[in-house]
Length: 391
Image (cartoon, rainbow, N blue to C red; front, side, top):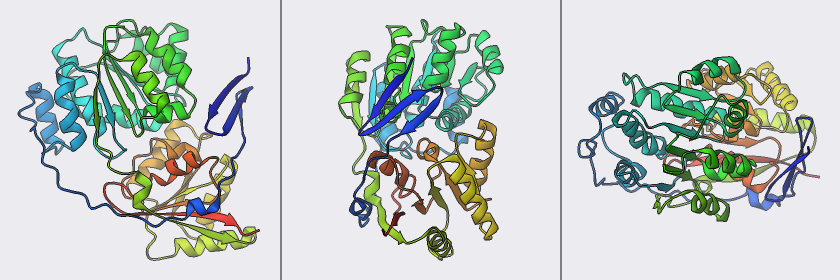
């Protein structure tokens, strides 16, 4: 059966596991904008970790991880989460939101060993980052967990699920796959987390999420985190939550912190030469470059390597293990340039990217905002450049 998914004015048609994308026209003027740096005001938290009265194991692990004070999103959500309230958190990536839901969730799992949690994230990379964070916060707790993401062998996941883990973290597609295989029963999941809800809806997962939530225990505590609170997100929250506490720590759009401009080119050779010169600039340090297809990403990455740049590529055609290795190299500064398809625009958590370069224009303006949101984070000013054919 053919399945249609819509995101803004971009239409996706799935047929035989292939995806055709109709690119929207975006006026190049929208790619030009001066950064409006927002001076980050010091935040005085109302609570300390000691006042939260967490399980001692969690509190000790947080100290060992270097946590000294709560970020605004943590300060305003964790106490209510520990009291069993449903939480709706509006915050950008990089604000400490993972700990904002992980701490109360893990604390309850340790307090009540009969509780079970399900965490849903839009991308494999984000799901892995959440799993790593939970593993550190709950180190030594003997909590069993399973990571259910695509691009990885399914047999180890099936084995993990046979042990009836207390916490399951995954992406909507793979979670639904296990539900259909009857290897995952959500009826006893009484803790639900949806991270980056708006992005999951952008990616067309609304029916999958609805089905997953319908299968979970109706008597549950829920955490919803999103960068925006539009009508789609409100619809999910209102349909599946119980008198939630709303917390917003988003003072400005991420893109406001990004200096945005265009680069005009005449020919393909002119285009690559201008990219070469840009990457040689002293102001350009760690750079994320977006191109359109897996093939073009590979070709561009190899061309940059040939020209002496330290680069690698990431796209949906690579296995999850390959993607993990490349991201680790990028985070550890073993490579300075990462060439990617839009798979990297969602869930890529690298705080020190100085430049995002759109070597090809995005499919929609929403995709553009997601792309450039990889820079200008944590109060820093970033840079975004979009290549435009002068013809």
